[in-house]
Every structure is written in C-alpha cells, then in structure tokens.
Image 1 (cartoon, rainbow, N blue to C red):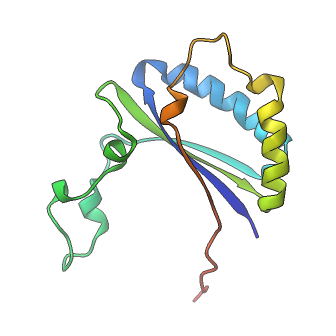
Image 2 (image 1 turned 180 degrees about the vertical axis):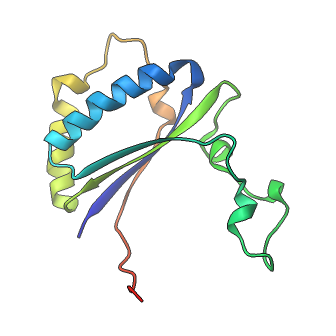
Length: 133
C-alpha cells in the first residue's frame, strides 16, 4: 500500500524563489531514494475560505473555521507550502528517508535558512481504500 509523507510549512514570501530552488533539489534526492512522486504547492492566498467546503445546512460563518494559515501559525509576511511525497509503501519510505537525511545534498548547515524548520508540520499517512462507484 502506498505511503504518503505530508508537510505544511510557513515560508517568508521574500524566500519563495529560494524555497523553490531548495524544493527542486530535495525532490531530485527524494525521487532518487525511492519516492514515486513529490508535489509542492503554494497556498492560493486569494482562494476560497474554509466555509465554502461545507454544505448549506451545516455551514458556519467563515470566521468559525480554522484555515491553513492559522493552523500553521503563519505570520503576516509568510505564505504556506503544502507538500507531499508518495512512496511505494512504508518500508520503502523508511529506507528512502534514511538515505535522504544522510545525503550530502540535503545538508543545509551554513546556508541562510529558507524557512524555520522547527515550525514545519509533518506526518505520515496511509491512503483510504475508497469504492470506485
């Protein structure tokens, strides 16, 4: 069964280009270590609010919902990146991530930080089998 690593991270808007360069390097390394797919997404800051994802009969006022910015603790000068990495299975993920974290291209010490890594939110997920019809 596939295994998905998900990440949500606040990134200063001034660092968007630097983040994209770092993400491109990271994606190459992660795929070389066994990942099937790497997806990186910028928050659509002009996009819909959370209330639009609920049916009319249960919808609350827009300010009643927590959005991604609030959940991630994004500051005024920050936007968000949501990303996920798809692995063939959890065992491949565990082996692959051990390789990723020891790969010299993933050692960013001595470089100006692109984002505050302590504020990165991460978790592993198992896909739900859903009926096709």
